[in-house]
Structures are given as C-alpha cells and as structure tokens.
Length: 302
Ligand code: PRP
Ligand code: ZN
Image (cartoon, rainbow, N blue to C red; front, side, top):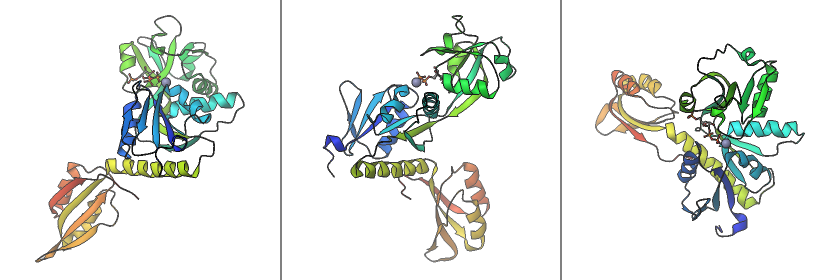
C-alpha cells in the first residue's frame, strides 16, 4: 500500500461546521483513521489510511462529489434530496451515488409558523409567503398538496424572515427545536425526515481507491453495528437454557460452554445486536441466569 501517493488518496468532503461535523469525523476515526489537521483547519490528512478530509459548506458537497473534486461526501439526506430535485428541474441527471445512510444527524425539514398564528394543514399555506433554503423540496410539497404559495428562497437565517416581514411562514431544518423556540416559531408540519448519508463520485475511480471505498464501507457497517451491540456472558441452569436463549435481545446462536465441575449449569456467551437494558438483565435473572456480565463490543467485522 502506498499511502503517500497523492493521486491515489481518497478525498472525503465533510460539513465545515454544523450538526454533522463532529459525528462524521468521529465515524472516520472509529474506522481507524489517524489524522493531522492542516494549519488552516480546512483539511485533515490521513496518516495511516490513504484518505484526506476536506471541510466545506454542506450545500457544496453534492457538486464537489458530482464534479469528482471529492470521491466521497458525508451530508444530510435533506441536502441530497434538494440537489436531486434541482438537477431534475434542470434536466440533468444527478450522477452522484448514495452509498449508505448513516445512523446520526437525524433532523427534519418542517414548516414553522410564528407563535399566535394558526395552522391547520397544508391548505393554511395557500396564498402565503414561505421562506426557505430548500425551494425544490418545498415546491414539490406544495405541488403534491395542490397549494399555491410563494416560495421565498433565502441563503440563511431563515428563522428571522417572518420578523423581518419577508415571509409569513418558514420551511427549515429542525433538530432540537431550540432555534424555533428562540425565534418564537412553532413546528406545524414535517415535510421531510433526514439523517446523514454518504455519497460517492460517479466517475470510475482506480482499483486502489475502489478497494478503500469498499473497506471503509465495511468498517462503517461494523462501527454502526457495534454501537448497539453488547457481549453478554452468564451462567444458566441447563433446564432453563431454552427460556434464557429467548430472552437474549437480537442475538444469533449463542456459544454454550461447559462449566468445570458443574454438570447442571453451562456458561452462555452471546453478541446481542440490540441495546441491553436493565430490564433484560432482570428478566434473565428471573429466568434462572446468574453471574451475568455485559461487555461493550469494540470492533465487529461481518
Ligand atoms: C439548521 C437550521 C436551524 C438549525 C435548527 O441549520 O437552519 O438554524 O439547524 O437546529 P435546532 O432545531 O437544533 O435548533 P444547519 O445546522 O443545518 O446549518 P445550515 O443550514 O447552515 O447548513
Ligand atoms: Zn447547509
């Protein structure tokens, strides 16, 4: 492996500063990446993997990947969908491919209304001005609901548009909801659910890069599975084994190990792919299990 050859290094675009930045970098680190950060903070150079990270505005990521400036991009489904619709409107086929959806960055694109203003359903939007940075997704929603409203496309600070008199309603991303509360708005309707995803360049990459994209996606799968997974070890009376196995959440066939000098009990070891709650342990104990240990799983490769 030649990790120093610049032409064979994967370039990954990440959001510069926002809800996906920390989680995305953390994901790459969990996939094994060790990096040094450039002085300007705009790039991270992979030290042990042929992979560099570019920090950019999330709205620019689809173009950077589409134009093959970057091989991969991590961004919200909201931005991907908006870009797809924008390309469609221009009669251009979106060429970037969606590689996989990630388990973080959950948020929603919603219609929000100033406190004190009524909203019943989509028909309440009729004849109103709605400020957004997502004109295509909003436009589709209005068409689907047969509503004639004016879409006011702004580039940012959507939440202050009603106070400035530029719009009656807004259509913006909501995560915790604190931006809406701070701006005296309430969330009336969700029009799109979103979370993080990875897109890849449409351009054929070298076999070497392809191999690394494959390795990275396998590792991401592993990282995502591990988050919820636990390794459970317990002692079970042979007579209760069937009941106890049924209680192990999301586990495939557990390993049964004999216990030295004890004939009526066995040790059960299982990887549980779902969260293990205190309630589960209590049920296992009631079913006859003892010496129950729950351990975190650090890495997993299917
Ligand atoms: C969104 C949105 C709000 C904020 C809502 O911006 O425009 O400002 O997040 O989050 P909250 O419900 O947790 O308060 P985002 O971080 O996506 O930045 P961007 O739109 O500039 O890319
Ligand atoms: Zn953005």
